[in-house]
Length: 286
Image (cartoon, rainbow, N blue to C red; front, side):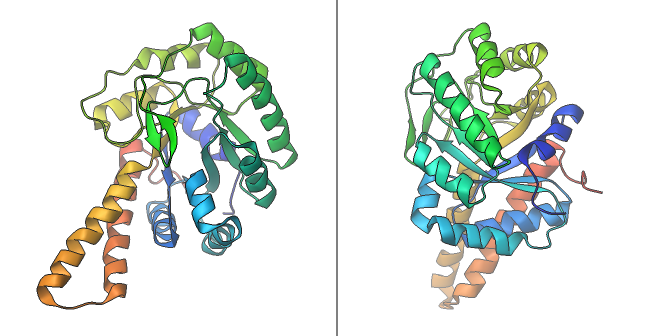
């Protein structure tokens, strides 16, 4: 099955109320690992790249990694640009082949956000791509974007007007979720997801999925969160796995980088497959 549009993946998940992991990768090992996990679990997958990752690896190199690793893939996958406030980066990624972008204009007024999001949607459509939108910041800083200030939530009608006017394909509301590591169990406004979906049936993106407990995640998926973003958990898995292996290596004095890569790759696969099992996306690809 080839790389497919984001809505091909999320429409089924939204209709059947399961979630699809949308995982932020940051190098070749993590990209290959999450794709391998999807193939083994027969699960759809959204691969996400932050603006920081696009800039650090380079657009052309990152695109080459994506195309080479997805050649012949047998599960539906999409490539998504996460939290991007920079329209020039959005244009560059769309022109290169990303088939989904999150235009993060949450720092702007709702009116200006709406105006520019309409333009981004039109631009994406010319490339056959889709757009995720948001009108409120998600608390926390991720890859240099965002703020630790508590997000201010807009009234329901403001969110609905934004959705109807812009025509975005996915919506990311603030519900008390946060990027990064939760310092305490968050109090989530889960009813807000239900209210939005009831009034305007659109797949909801759950940001800050790392660190939520399983019951919270399952409840939100059942309410319409078809896209569940994971970034911090993969970073922690990658770095903690590397640290454990290197400490063991230091003890035994066997310095073999390929062995390190294999071990960390498996850690990343295990994490991704666990998420697919939790979200109910495992086995969805017949």
